[in-house]
Image (cartoon, rainbow, N blue to C red; front, side, top):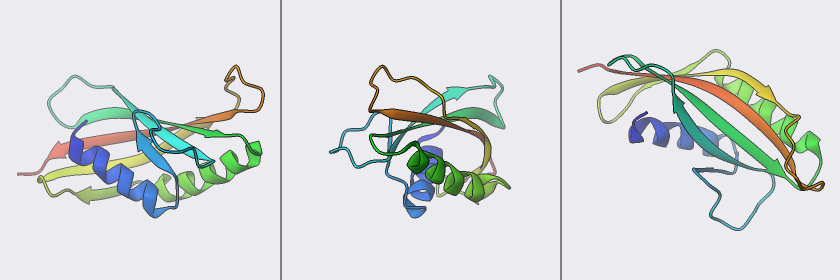
Length: 123
């Protein structure tokens, strides 16, 4: 996945009011917050397909995570597309979510939201 694609997703999530950082949360915890990671699905040149995994955390109610998941799902369920500044095209689509992920800490709740990202060069 390109840096431009990661930046696009970050801007979309922040625009939705989702507390988000890529890789790991480095700021003071503001619950709920989400951390994104990627896993490449295709090894072909283009379009590149990447699984984008959002992990959300809260010390409040699990309902907070489900509400954030619903916002993300509603935004990406039909796909969000753009031509990025680097000339690449990107499409981001909601896949699914899992809200029963143990954390090893009874007060910390976790959800995983899965998005599929396809990127291709248009120039």
